[in-house]
Length: 518
Ligand SMILES: [Zn+2]
View 1: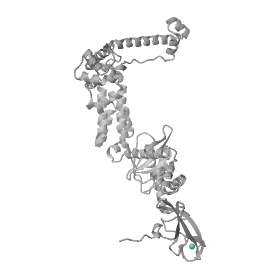
View 2: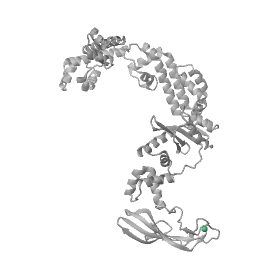
View 3: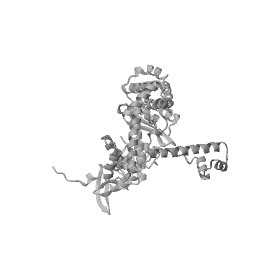
View 4: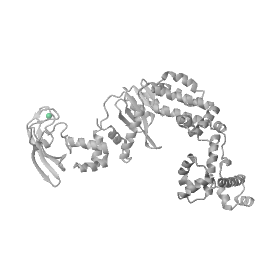
């Protein structure tokens, strides 16, 4: 069934259209209230006695790409109630239609609020203009601030963490409602007293998830002594892995002795590289000699006379500007290396033959370059099997011994095997850390006490001591379903919104935008 479109259906409910005109790109619609009576806002008495009329111009939703302005012809009524202090009152409109002295209808205000929440001041103002909703960026922000309501749902389970307002400069705190997966509040700093004051005002909180270290644990203990504290699982896992890395670092001296060589083995170099290496060694010796003389207090002039080196060189060495690193050079070959590797792998290991094939591909270098590469390759392979290469970094060793264990190359397998045989304390530390990870993953809280005992006398004792200091919260982290992982996610969202604001928004506006509307 078709229905005729009434003019009054285009304006908010409760209004009657008197006239409608275009003025340039605007549609001006004169309206009045459909009710004939007014209700006194002070005493609630209904009044029919009109005192006078006045006009309000308010913005409404656009119509066919035109800005719409409602010219509201409103009335003033007299209040006849004897005991009412108010003699005259202005006409009020229905809740959710037009607020007293508003410049926009409630339905426009709603859109403006959400534009401000989603985009922030300036971008939202640009976008609103395209929607034929003229509104300034200041107005947008004002609406966002004014309409922000702190969430009313009761807080029982919260996560609290800090985030960088300006990295290394200023930090703020975020509190999340973990049950509702919403931000509950932003605090301007991460001081113990600030967090404590906020927590005291929310006594219904029974579970607090927080990371280890920092004052949040203490603030929660003081403000909500009965609340259960949960250490953050992710940080626990991360700290445990870091503890193993520290154990590796502590054992580096042993590792070096076990793995062997610590310097470049000249036997592994090609003839040209050996010449370079000898030059490098000569330079290092010169440097050392000059430095010894300089340390003994000899003036530069004297050193120059004694060693016969140039004055400039001596000065460079003393200033520490002549420390070079030994590198092998193979630039003309670089782009052909993948091809050469393929050939090598498929069994072609004759330098001359490789050079002939490479030349057919446009290689301009001499035979010597290729045969030296082949020699180096052969030596490297031999060295690989003998396992006397350079010592990997502590980080690499930690990785090889833990997460990378299933993906080791042949040489790495040998390294790890040598390590495991030579540094048993490190193997023990690895097992202890793996056990800790397992406890958290599988929620095996019962093993914690014996774990603490065992870990306390191992290479990761300091991590174990940290766990002891925070034992109740760590236990809760193993058993509790709540975790601060969610809070980290909210921090990511917060940073995104802040970046949209070009990092300039104040904390109340940021909070208004993040907490926003239901
Ligand atoms: Zn009244």
